[in-house]
Length: 316
Image 1 (cartoon, rainbow, N blue to C red):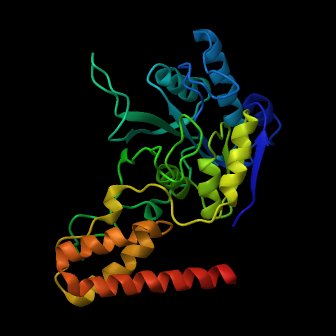
Image 2 (tube, rainbow, N blue to C red; image 1 turned 135 degrees about the vertical axis):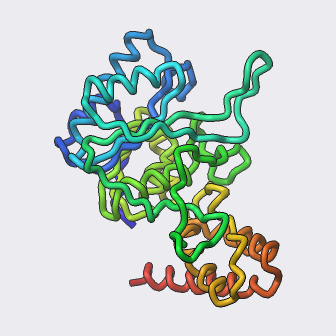
């Protein structure tokens, strides 16, 4: 486990206190200025006031990032183009991706199309930013020995379910993000031991994921109730992240040779289902549906082996 710090305070004030070029990764989910109730405040400002606020915290983010650092920022449709302009033209950061987070349930509308996605901008401080592709690959539909068995690039459209209110990990926060979504960002753009900051910590998802992925995390949150809830969340036992890309449970359809299948099942769990032990039963079911009952035992043996290995490493 890594050090985790959560600061009760205003993001603009607290970011200004951090040293220049000391942060490896920033994951920011600022208020969208849509009037949501965050307990001790509502995120409603005048148009120019909100843009001024955005310029301020983005300038501080740019300052604290290391030369090879990365910023991911969630933003609603009304202001995302303005943020893009600030990051590229005002701050001179390098655009990498405009990521679409697709979810299957959302706000219902009777006039117009119901929204089913959020947007995430990915900018880097330089063209030399780190990107760990192998850490975030997804299983391919077909296994090809001459291709990369490790998996494919997940692309810029990500499917993760919302953290529904019936989920045991659901926090008392209106815009909680799924852990699997944040996991991908952290694995892609940081290494073990790196420093990750979330300037608008909210429900504490970034801190919780960093805690499990061996990153040092700093969270800033203005609402003391959310800070208290996050501290409780960080103290809870870990049984697997609360969400996963559905493709991670996909079984290649053409693993005809038994020895190759066995090797692949072992690797699949290490590559794609680390920190997702709560999905192993679903993966075993998928294996049975594709290859029959005889392969279920080998898949389960791997999961038990990994649990033993994990416990041993924690004890050491």
